[in-house]
Length: 207
Picture 1 (tube, rainbow, N blue to C red):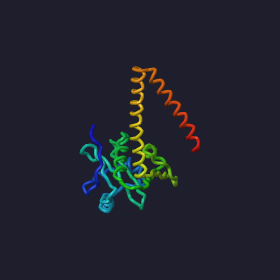
Picture 2 (picture 1 turned 120 degrees about the horizontal axis):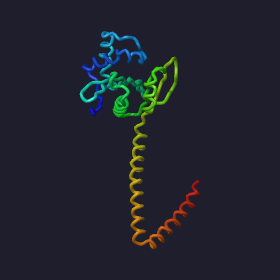
Picture 3 (picture 1 turned 60 degrees about the vertical axis):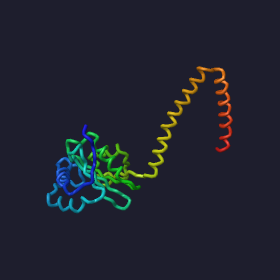
Picture 4 (picture 1 turned 30 degrees about the vertical axis):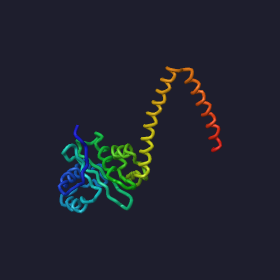
């Protein structure tokens, strides 16, 4: 399987942008469904391709699409498009995830989608975007990126994994203890149970 990757857009990516933006199927689902003239595209691309949130999508060494973000303060308006043969294959999700990882500050992602574009609506819902509003046939989605929260949530997930392993270790100790000295182990376990009961009573004072 060829590796999916994204790289910062450069001037040589103009052709893949034009081909994808001007594809009839993509235009039909785009907010701007008009056919794009090459002169118009070239002017737009030269003006925007250096944007730090513009990335070209790759499968292996082949360019297959783009994911770009236009910044408005702490808001980044996201647009993603792939060539037809690479759509509906989970590649878009991989590209979007890679794009989100490139953003190393807190922000709000915004995506605007035609209500009739069911595939894109489901795509953003699948990738954690929530509906903000609906107006004139356009659904606006949003997703909050909070790197500080993610740091703590990731740490909690790691702690949970370690605790699961440690619980298994405790159970293994009990098995060994009961196997080798069941009577003594049972007495110790009884004392632990009594102490836990006392702790539970004490913690009720905090309620």
